[in-house]
Length: 334
Ligand code: NDP
Image (cartoon, rainbow, N blue to C red; front, side):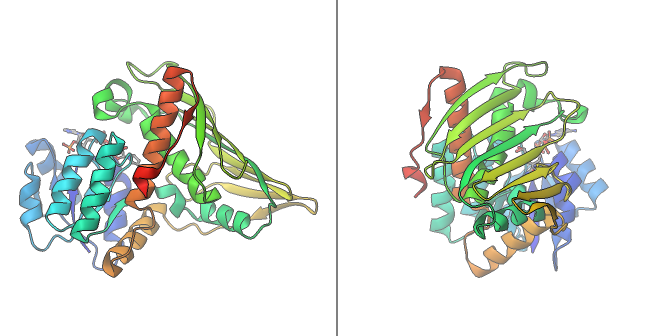
């Protein structure tokens, strides 16, 4: 597929340009940035033939089939709406938008235009998470009692910009990481939280935005979910635990960008390691997105998935700020 990049970002540079080019016929034809200079230098260093500051120019190029949006979060909505209006498929970074209304508008526009809208929730494309999902779906864990997500990281120096000090750009750990936890939990349990309670904190990095949060979610099945995310933890690894009536699954180092970590299943029969596929998460995500776009199907992480993960994250922030339980109504997502 032939792509334009909207946003000359770190994630595109580190993972997504490679993932787009790894597909059959995968071509990155344009990079569009707010800065002419940055766009030109980025294009040169990544061997991208066209660059500029005018998204419309890239969208007018008939060779471009799809747009990958990885600008800062406040730009996702307008850039996606423009790409959709130009008849391009859109793979958008998370959070899909800053508000529920914006995200819903993007989904409606993509449906009306007959193009595929996806959100780059990479974790549901990890072999580790697919193996956990399979263990749950096959009944090996029995009835699920609880799920705990450990996603406290140490934000690398080079990413300590808008995420830490710019609420208008969608900064804060909740739009950044809680959305990923929400999508992962929804994917693994195949249900959406009914309500959440939460606390958030500024613990050393945030300037005007939270850098840490913990929340507890009530699931319709009765399962309890705990989600912890932070930018400020230098000495821990990520993880996830699912506990059921017949077994527990302990996943270490799996809330990650690379296909790493370890899964251990614990049942009455003992402990065993679960193997999983170690294909690149981002290559898998792009492969599935392109297949959906070609077949006119919903993406494997769809606009609706992006809307729901955003709704959950916003509910966590509201619960933390208000100190009250927040109920979730997904009517707008149906
Ligand atoms: P960066 O901070 O690297 O880049 C964001 C934007 O900042 C760029 O698109 C660019 O703006 C501008 N920028 C960066 N460097 C320069 C520079 N040297 N000169 C001028 N402008 C510059 O963001 P990330 O890559 O960390 O995040 C981008 C998006 O991707 C966010 O929405 C984030 O939430 C998401 N993300 C998703 C991940 C995933 O695994 N799914 C992982 C990491 C991020 P412009 O748009 O104008 O080019």
